[in-house]
Length: 486
Image (cartoon, rainbow, N blue to C red; front, side, top):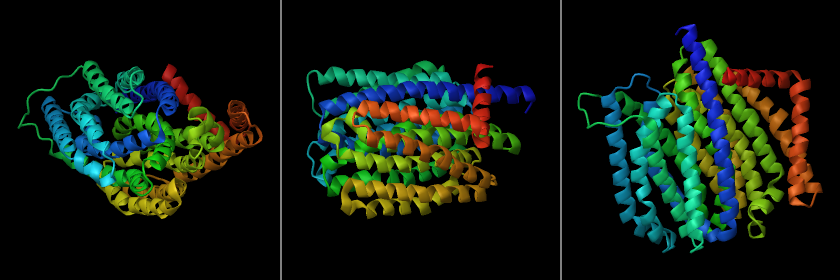
């Protein structure tokens, strides 16, 4: 790879990261507004019902994607015939899932003893087909490194979904508001993806083999399926044992926990994987890119989750209101676990960039059941006990992932692990402590949040300017900023 090509790739990576962060920042604001407004319109039981549906949809989405969006996005030389074949595979999978979920809605409702789940599931079933159609259009944007367009495709549908939900809420304040929001978001998603991709599929092409792509996809699908069990076992268990209302409390706290990861780290995967794949054979450049990428999880998200844990009490009062007070301890514990989940994101990128999806799957087969066991161990104590198990399980998973990743990908992980520990000690824990002190001593929720965030900002300025490690972090962030501008 020439130096010009290397420079261009670096600029595209930095600009892609910048566009993604800005776009996802907008998304976070929209989703936060949605959460605040809808939490005051709907009850915890309404959110609990939709949390059960969301678990089913998440499983269907894994099957519908089958790892093929990532497989396509990391291939620089994908043929038109291969793209078309992948499009039809994803679309057919989406159609099958739509029909299957429609007819299995009754048994699902009977399993949880909640008759309302049947009409909800039948209405939401169409999202599988819509997502299947849009899969390869999104993959094409990522493969071409068109991250600005991809950001629009990710952000605009969320706005449409929120507006549709609020419009419907004028006439009805039941769980159907959430159903309308999900369907409107899916419809807008497929329309925007098709409009932005500048690509149209052809008929299936037998001469265009997708065997290698399917092989990669199977490994990734296996990993994601195992991870799905860990991510949804808590919701399913709480729903079956404790019912919709406690599940609504837990699911709302979990949604807030996942918001930074879903809206920052997960979308950046579409930037990181294609770029890291292209430099995977250049150890020096790969190491620099990985080190910079870990800063997002270790520093930015570590600070965010530290603030969330410290300010859990005032944040719940501001965002949800008095009827959601039971969420405070749950959210606080989940936020601490989020620190470890953010740090694990870098190993996910490395596995995919190095083509080690099968090795990653083997790792998840071993570790994810242990995470599930930790969460279920807290089930007798309700949502709070499950949240504690979540944090313990993902802390152990984070440490094990660095060891396994280094072993199977030949990536030096010791320095990355040491940097991760430093990020927790230097950024996450102080953010939690300073913001927590503000929340403890100030009774006014808005004032507590303002003072807590201000205190953390002052601390960060001191660390970034006056300590060697902080100055090193600042240099990397500034270098990325110059690349974005340049």
